[in-house]
Image 1 (tube, rainbow, N blue to C red):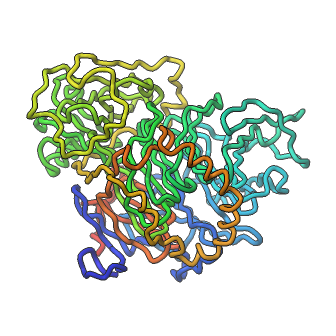
Image 2 (tube, helix red, strand yellow; image 1 turned 90 degrees about the vertical axis):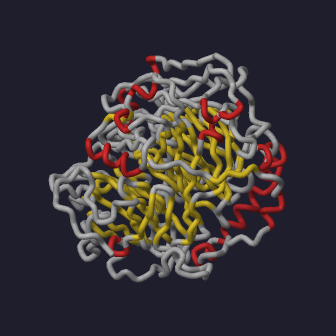
Image 3 (cartoon, one colour; image 1 turned 90 degrees about the horizontal axis):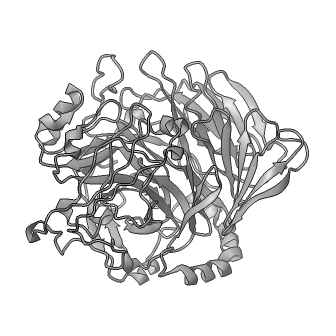
Length: 624
């Protein structure tokens, strides 16, 4: 294991990497795996997945981790950056016969130190509800496989609900369940509820309440992953047919779609404020899609093979202005952190502070950066910054302003409005405020305009008003969009811890032959075993896929490569021997996992060996 810069060998595994905010370090003593620490022979197995929950116990060590490796499922106390992992004492361990766990999800609303609700999906189609603390198997859904016989690809609790959960299958169907209902002893009968462009929603016809409550059929081929928006009102689905489809969940209305550049979409995630969606898949790209404009605004190229996971880092953003430190409102700890990170950069802790409202009224220019990451079958971790020159390409950089009033993710800007500012403050009171957008009304100054060397996409729709025009737009969310359910989920999602902003961006010239490169499709042993089934799936849908690609390329569904900016990663490091299957951003670290069954913790800059801010226990020695 060689550290970054420790040699010229291309295949060396990195144990640290550097960004503008500092050095991220791999904590080798905080590695979780099977108790024997033996690499798992991943051939023919399902991807290793990781789920976290906090049980809010009094010891200050409330994080719990669940992960699957082959036929096994483990549940541990997660000590993160604070203490070495003790693999000899799992809270719960289960070994399954005849089927393998494929995915899982905790319900954060019901989690306590004495009980947690964990959903586990399986390769044969069943879903199990277990309590790994009480060691009880509560219920088994789709036990007789009468609802769906295909592999479970994704399972999630419906945000804000203690009883509803959604399950996706490789058949392309999703099912809404209620934990209080049974599944019945005969195959369910369905009645059409709503139908749209390549999707349909059916209700289950039954005299008594039974599962599933709803069946969604989405696209063609497998539904690989779905993700709820931060407010729980929208659902983004990534499908094997290459389409991202975004639905209003309660109304089952299609909000917008996007097509991959090539192949299926494998993963999807939302920005913490619900304004942007990132998807990744078999085109080796990460694609950024605007929720309000329903269009692709950027693509990222850094991976050499399929992208398996994308995730936003809700703890990292940058807010740059000319204010002195006194303009920052928060705790003393945050004040010192701001000084440490340099003047003019406000650092807002996601737990207990926000930017001063004075920044939103004094007219100083402010810029915002979204940080997200991706991992892939090429064993590489990439970090990306989405900056204001991509988000607002037709306004001078110095005139992009941020209004730091309380944001409402339930009221994104109306399509067609000139979106020129992003609110990145939190909503600790649980009430939804209005999301403001505005544009500068000062006279143009050539010295302050965006340099011509920065990427600009002339093909993107221009706002109806020039950059220097005096037309502030204010979008006010309707009261019907505000709900306790939405606000309860997103209370802690909006503020992020500030770091400095940097992104290497280049407008794609003409790389249509890029896909002829030597890809590492078969980089891992696990992929070899699935080649035959992959080929069958590809053959079965190749005709429709080619027809769809021909129709969509060059449209707003799938812009040509030269029509949108191409992001380059801030960081692109090989961090594993096997394909990567997990990327999760936590407050003081990020977590990755590979198909060998090793779950790795990477401490954020300055967080090595430190306790989290919520605990009062003494600081432990720094891990080497």
